[in-house]
Length: 316
Ligand SMILES: N[C@@H](CCC[C@H](N)C(=O)O)C(=O)O
Image (cartoon, rainbow, N blue to C red; front, side):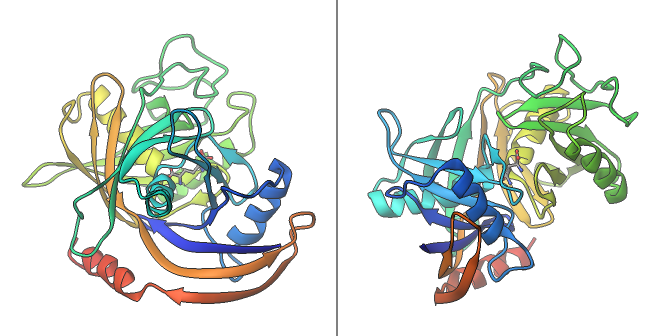
């Protein structure tokens, strides 16, 4: 089956994005397509597969997201910006509600965060701090800056469902080896957290203009990524919840892949504005029954917006 797609990224979190509104594949077939296209050893590669899906009663369109291991995530906020951009292009809308796997989000096109950088704002929530919603099998009360019994880390975590599961620890300086070890432990689906989790270490970085965070994330189903949008949202909420930043205060959130503007409100809603960059358009044959992949054809390159994004990175 031939798939046309856009290779896109939000803050360097990169994905093939397919307009799947008229496609009827089973979950297992999409999982195979995701594994095939997101494979970093293949011609496309990515931190997962994004699907633009059809409208329903309240939503102008929907998004599904499959991790490179074929698991389907509840949400993907860097991917949502890209998917919303495509959804706006094909529907002519400029804002609206987007259906996710188990929740909805609001999205709208906003002023560029830098010249030539297409920018989308997403609003999600309310987040849940219920340990069960995060997939933890311990605790009746929320873990907010608390040691989680059974987790092989003495650090204090805030456990947040976006609704995908996030464990967030504030650190003086990110230790990647420690993050990877803990992320790997969660990837093994231990009894403490059988549905696994995205794990983030976060540095609070004051700037002369405003509060800022630096977030490094080990993503469930992926490993270390350049950035994770739902982790940036969870970290912003956790930073406000623990008094590290103010509720409702716009905060710049940096990561390996770039930067977004984020704001956590006291009602649990988190707003993020960041890039939705389309790098190139491609076509490829994938057999949904076997995951076998054909030759990639690059149809167009979006050089101007790639350059605009690189210009923004150079100025950070
Ligand atoms: N990169 C994403 C999150 C993707 C899903 C995640 N790996 C999970 O399994 O929960 C983002 O930008 O939010």
